[in-house]
Image (cartoon, rainbow, N blue to C red; front, side, top):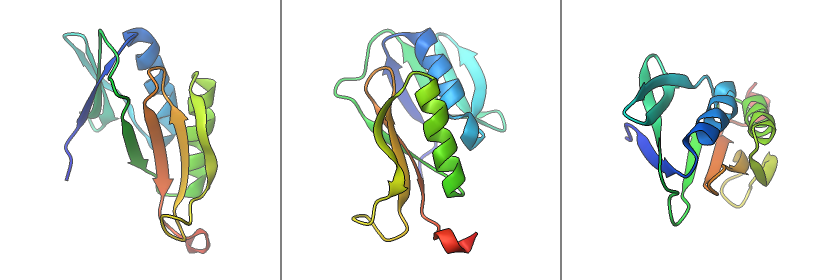
Length: 124
């Protein structure tokens, strides 16, 4: 349904590095930079764009899909190493549904970045 999401960030270089590292486990990479924008995605198509200048207020919540629970863990590890702040360690969130496995990290501007896997553990 969505084609892409754009965020304003306070510190362009810091946020660019954060997203390069945090989204790498999902297969996202920096695919474009133009006129002060950085685009992250795959296959040459940006799906998340950031632009420096000012923070998004209020902060937003973005959830990315993962194909397995190991990718959720790898995202959380990478995002924490990239300077993110833990906002919910990898684990089940049965209040959403019985197989909702997610991790949450705050980016440098306080945006809540989630990676979620909806596939049952025994499906692997």
